[in-house]
Image (cartoon, rainbow, N blue to C red; front, side, top):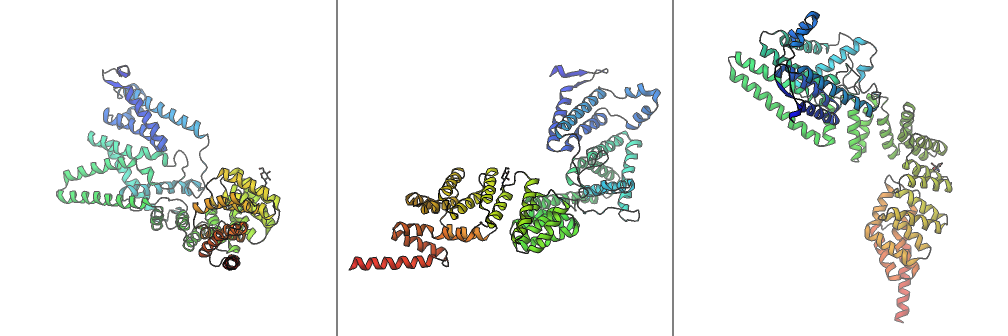
Length: 574
Ligand SMILES: *[C@@H]1O[C@H](CO)[C@@H](O)[C@H](O)[C@H]1NC(C)=O
């Protein structure tokens, strides 16, 4: 890389190559996380302070006296100015590319993301930003309060000077100003350099998160103090070395530092364990941010995903209580209440959610399901269509719309809606099944068969579709093919009866649940019965009865068959 080596006036060599590599690595860091770009600023600080041993105060003083401008640039030796220009233009290019890719406007944040930035008065904004800084500083000193999310009311705004939390600001600025004074004016040039370096590493990577240049979408975030922790470590180590030079009880000091180190290691282990599971991560936040609606929402969602609905309801309710405009919590709560048949309250919540956020498609669909259950069919239809209007590709909503139409005996509409669901999501087995069942029920066996074959072509391993099609084939007296399909389906899922029994009772209710359960359980037997293969029919009835002893019709059929077999035996014996 010799052609990259430049030589400045004093005869020092330096390599542009490595400067460019650092710009490239900075770009890669930014692709991982935006603040990665601040590493370029750190490079510049390191270059100026450590490599060039620049005296910042002297430099500023000379810069201020314009007549000495030339002299001040003389302080920038060894091509420093050139390298810094290179770093800055590299940074600017990266930012420009990012801007081209991400679009012009900053992301739209809402008040709950960062309440301070939405305060009207500049005073309130400034006070609260500074309070956030002091919280960040405190987390560096003592990482005890760790939380995955600090927004949504976690930190109430400071609205007046009488708030005691203002002390934190004073403490922060007292320490910072002290450090800055020492960094600039200390007699000892070594001390100046280390302090400036530490402060630079502490402050520069934090600037993008400081709300000074643009609004950020969080209040406090642990990730933004990862890089500043380098500066913190520099300052901490330097402070320790100063103290140990003066202090008489060196052992005690060493013990104290070891203790702090050990505590931080333990904290790190504990925290890493909390990050392993969602449940622990969310629950650990309850004690740190009890006022944060999002924490309660996440704990509730995690419980609901695990099937613990009654506990989930408690947390969702708390989330809505803390933030009465929290539409996602309302939607999820409404959804659970809907499943528990508490339809009145579910409807109230979902209506409120779509009132607050009119383009919330999922809430519209859930509202439609509730209205459907309340037998308010016209409103339900309206809600489904509104949901589809706001989310063009919404197969589940078409599926529910189809169920509504089927309930209303609007068979063509129902078929169209289910067709739409399968166009958007070809593996939507429930929609396919309902189409087959509806066509079968309305006597369109040929069409039902065609739809069944089409569906199986798309999802060949779906046994519920195999059952549906086999049933249709049996009715069309294509016994051989029907049998083959039934056997395949039973082989794929030996517990079909009980399994489907569960499915039907669970949340994915079919349009015609009773019919489906019935035919899944006893159709293979009925098929053999009709076909005249009585021994096989008997066997299947027995399996079926074992799976579901209370299945209506099966018992009677079985008894009929037994009587017939006995008669046959008598005849044979006679
Ligand atoms: C099905 O989709 C078509 C095209 O998107 C739409 O015009 C039609 O209204 C839909 N029908 C039903 C019943 O969902």
